Length: 359
Image (cartoon, rainbow, N blue to C red):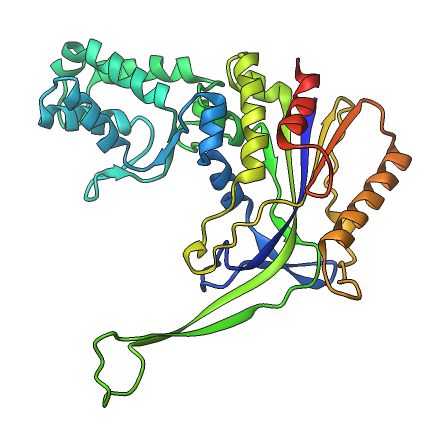
């Protein structure tokens, strides 16, 4: 069973997701340039939105190279000597990834749930004498044994809804890998987009009347676009990733639906304040094993109407393409729920209807 989400969201002038030159990300689709927001930016905004943690009742996991610092501080709070706590934290972190000695952190980002961190600290504290007895030059046979047992407990499951959704990959510790239950597409504009430039100046407040010139000058790139967003959650894999906890899996789907509607990437928001919620959302629960991105509804770019506007035309094209796919491939086993700012339904009703088939 899959839960799919199709969103149309129009943003005012903004630079939500920058490339390496500082310009808004873009791509070519249907032979024309489109505005783009990467899936990474969308996923981070979703998992860190307060409504996700509130709905799941679980704090978001931590992605960091500073596991050494995280563990050491927790061990010191547990009453262990600071220097010894750092040594044990470093030695345990090496079990996950190589340590960059000069910087004191792991060479790669680690993705850990709060429960995993708390369990590690608790277990290390309980076996402190055994682990530190033969600890030398950052190595301990007892710690190696402890780490293997600890990793075995984490294999193929997690207590963190966001890790269960978006997955975890550690090349050096493949047994801790978790396949993502959620696929998120790069958001692309439904129409052709050209980038604009904003030339700005900053005034020096203490400049005298006889002193000309700006205190600072610069250029910021931006665009404005109506985006199509697509995401898909694999229900069975999500349940598996959460250790067969169906209640938490249901809360995770609910948190994802709510956060996906409300979360907006934070890029350049202080300069543009493009806090624009979606105008249209189509939620789909499928039991036919198929998955449909509707991006090809916009393979031929949408054009503004006589009086301007892209949203109405985008909704129409999405509906037409969805109808065609259902006619060709069949629509059995599909539950669809739409939410539009022009409709009569509300967010609560929309979420409730989508969660119904998960009971």
